[in-house]
Length: 103
Image (cartoon, rainbow, N blue to C red; front, side, top):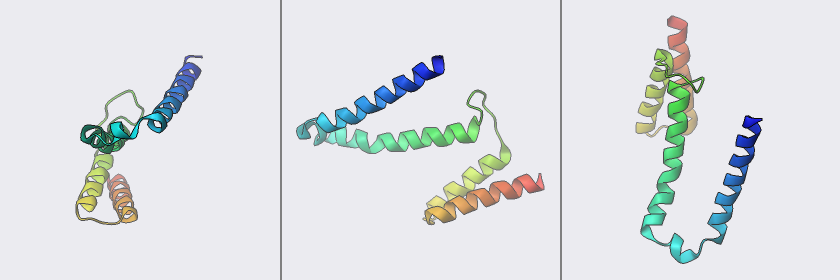
C-alpha cells in the first residue's frame, strides 16, 4: 500500500510541476537565474540516475563494481572525445562486457 501512495504522490507531483511550467508568467521564466536553474536541473537528474545505476544497482547498498565503473569511465572518455551517442553506448557496454568476460 505504501508503494501505491508513493506512486500516486509522485504522479500528482509531476502533474503539478508540469502545470506550474505552463502557468508561470513569461517574465519569471525570462529571469537569468530561473533560466540557469532550468538548464542545470536535467543535468543534475541524469547525473543522479547514472550514479545510482553505477554505484547502487539494487538502490539500497553502495557497491563498487569494477567492470561497471570501467564502462562508465569509458563512456565518459568517449563523451569527452565527442563521440556520437550510440558509439558511447557501444564503448561502455563493450568495455564492461569485456571486463566481465575476463574477470
